[in-house]
Length: 385
Image 1 (spheres, rainbow, N blue to C red):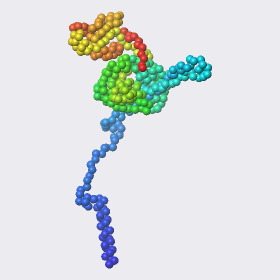
Image 2 (cartoon, helix red, strand yellow):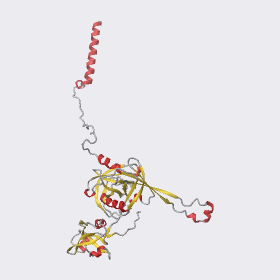
Image 3 (cartoon, helix red, strand yellow):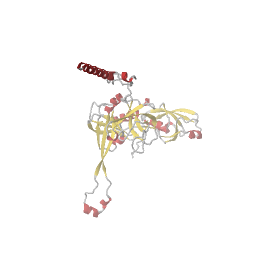
Image 4 (cartoon, rainbow, N blue to C red):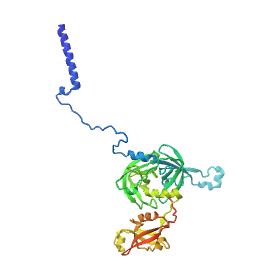
């Protein structure tokens, strides 16, 4: 009897062991149904940086440009409005002079771009306007006092200088090669949160008529730009500077996807003159311009809307001495197409005063080419609200 019980116990133990192994390794043998296998797509381990594998990222462009983008902190002294009670002798007798006007300091925030290893920084004029103290913080946290080399209110550009060498200067790109739809990245210090990168596309080119600056030729982008981004970099997908972020259209003060940047070609032109002379000299010929609309072309029997109508000529101006007359239609300036008054104005101001340029124009049914000796544009007073 004992031997029978021992045999039974050993047999049961072996069966339970077999059942455990089968349940663990081959559960489908017990249910009669094949095991369900879930197929997933597993990403491969990230390649080592620089391995040449292209991914959907702009990290390389950002890494190239970010060290050259700085934060700019400004302050200036302002005075509170004088208290009207201070004019009352009785009030002054009892309260003395301690209620005299007290100077306060207003603080500002913006961004800038290092364009030279020798410490030159490009930013917006309105970022540093009237500031008596300017501090520049580099991407690595180092801070320097800065001074204004020169500013140009008509394009809203300014150049700063800090006492530093071997700085990480940005690479200038070709704004002329931009196309609507190209990817661009905006880098700056929005609202003081710290250096930030936003992405968008080029929404439009050659935006004018916005009444932001005297001379406008903006790149429009939907890359988020907020307060503090002014003066920062707009870069292409290769990390090259294509514009200086300047303004947004917004009813709330925050980004709604309509931002504007000054093309790097304009910025470079202004920057070079500011560094060399501290001011910008522009060409001038003394004409009043008007866009040729379809109605205007029909009324004056112009036959086409291409070109820019000369609505007036200032007496004694370079245009007057060259023989340009009201009613002439300017087609090209120095071989470049005059599409509208703004584009023609930009072409003229880019000319060097004292040199001659060729204007191709239409007068009635005739085509003329006139040589104009470019004058110096008179100074313009400017105030930014």
